[in-house]
Image 1 (cartoon, helix red, strand yellow):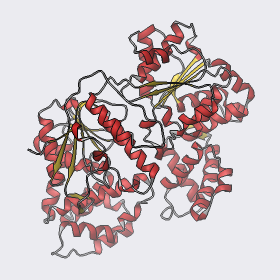
Image 2 (image 1 turned 45 degrees about the vertical axis):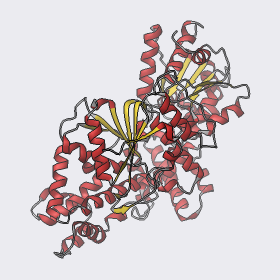
Image 3 (image 1 turned 120 degrees about the vertical axis):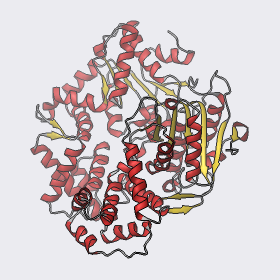
Image 4 (image 1 turned 90 degrees about the vertical axis):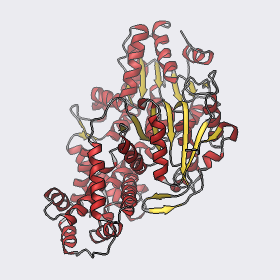
Amino acid sequence: MNLNQQQKKAVEFKDGPLLILAGAGSGKTRALTYRAAYLIKEKGIDPQRLLLVTFTNKAAKEMKERVNKLIGANLPWAGTFHGFCARILRIDGQAINLPKNFVIFDEDDSLATIKQAMDNLKIDNKLYRKNNIKACISAAKNELINSLEYSQLARGVFGETVAKVFREYQRLLKEYQALDFDDLLMLGVKLLKESGPVAKKYQEKFQYVLVDEYQDTNKAQYELTKALVKKWRNLTAVGDFSQSIYSWRGADFRNLNNLQVDFPDLKIINLEQNYRSTKNILDAANQVISKNKSHPILKLWANSQEGPKIRIFEAGDEKEEAAFIAKEVKKLKYKDCAVLYRTNAQSRTIEEAFLKIGIPYVLVGGVKFYSRKEIKDCLAYLRFLVNPKDKVSFDRIVKLGKKQLDKFLEWKRPTYLTTRKILEKILEITAYLKRFDEKDEEDLERLENIKELMSVAEEYSDLNEFLQNTALVEEGDSIKENKNAVTLMTLHASKGLEFKNVFMIGMEEGLFPHARSMMNRDEMEEERRLCYVGMTRTKENLFFSYARKRLYFGFLGSNAVSRFLGDIEENLLESINDY
């Protein structure tokens, strides 16, 4: 086996609870798959008695394929937490009075059922948004709190409203013989806790349980693993405190600490040798993450070359930043490059710069800027204003509400208004922004996108010119995507990936770290982990860029350079402002 000393220790660990703390690029998938192969081939464990759990179907599929390639064995019980729970509930759910032929509702089905529950209770869906209520119910279920317990905990008008909807929603799910995604985990735990015979069956069956990305588990997932390993206590958990960036989804990196409480004989093996990045990148990443105080930090090291210094570009504004990135990318192989940003709205200037000089790109985990629903809605109002015969735009704004349409049609546009002022006025008279709730993560992103559209509008005093520009960009969007393309994505979406060249843009206080995290220590530490994740995606070349002034969210701002750049020693950095 081609493993380093620490990986070998982890793979050949005998029995009992094991925590593999695996740093970025340290070969954790390799360690986990080799351990599964070792248990089957060397220890003679029946693959049926080995459970391998991860977070995505893609990761589970990759691990299955790797084990098969290593020893020709199939892993019949490798999959996601949700998939595992669905499977045991289908087999044994009757023990907790679950019908055998239950259906699983996806996100849209769940939201439609919540809307139905709100209608049944005559709750105004303009006052309370179904997405927010769904998020509260989801968070409760992930904490293993049922609708009755929630009612006892609920405080304030909103909390009590959620509690009512929660009870009615569960009643409807029961009537429809349906489970939502969060029910799968919650009822999986309930099944193992309330049915002795079923718990005994699975605890006996799974002699070894291997769990990937343990820092991303929530309470339900933690309790599920704990219940499954009760008999044999052969748990292998792989995780990294420094790559915990999903607290807003309920993930809790403290579960790595909880393991040490629940398993006092837990063996911890650190994987700190990195096989991905150059020494300079690792030194810089270590300097950024070491400022966090609430969790252990792995010190990554490598046998690789020092590599080029980390390059920093100071732009006059966001257009100059985008032009610089386009110019640099042009010199490289497109598929080896990724542009990472903190918020989706930042993709807009990069997309436009790339389209201008014909650089193909793929937008991961998001919709291209001008294809986003809220942007198309705003543009529909403007297009109809310019051309009242535009039926497509008219049909779109009709769907946004009769009252809003009447107010819009009554409004007479004064000739002296700039493009931005026209857009602001339309949003005001149609009360379009009231559709969004600033407390909702997705809505906040939509509002940020609309503010970014304001930034574009600011640049075009003439409305026709503005619409012509957006139409040309949209046309560019529809160019067939090509495999040799630059990847554009948020820092959150980049986790688990690697690229030869990475550009991290918008390195300014308020943008990254995000303004919303400034006053909260835990959130600021998560921003720092996010920066660390971004930096450790890089194999060779890392570029940081920031702007002295930025027209962002419709306002011209001037922010200080991100504190994360200040954490890196100067000998690792190189300014490239001869551009």
